[in-house]
Length: 230
Image: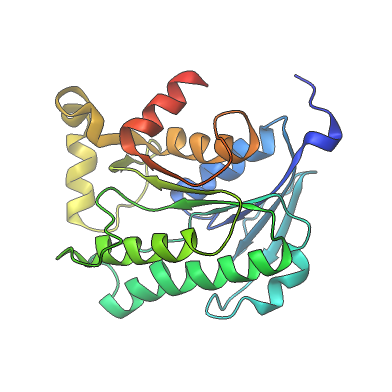
């Protein structure tokens, strides 16, 4: 399928060395509606592609240095995150809330008409009342992003994300979830999503016809529905 050049999108991906971000990168590079991908991260991807521009950035507490790289972009996918129980509570909040808000600020300053696709999680609580730190922090980030003035913020709230490809799991809980995935998929299909399917939906909502203008909260079943239509 040929997409007119003027309709192709310039996309930024943060966290392309991670599980979901890695799939998003591959999908975006192959997507006919994507003209270019700027991958921003703390370590090199180790790949090359005609559409790909890689920007190394160590300190996501201050994204001012990214102003030039973020200029003229159409959308961003923020897939940077940390695992609960693997890092301290302070580090979890910093990565989940502070990094997301600081990057979004820099993006909006450089590309005010860009859309923002954010990897949140099921149970995210913008009210801050949840006893789960992950839910409070994701909710806090969501609330801030939705108030920033982007023309479209797409909040993805997946349930358990199945890694698809073999990897070293961060802890015993994730190893157990991976082992039980076939059972969950049959008994609780609305509580699981494949990592590649989630990434495809995140790309499509800003590059293709899956998304509409305006803000959206996209729950796990919504993600499954989007993927089923692609």
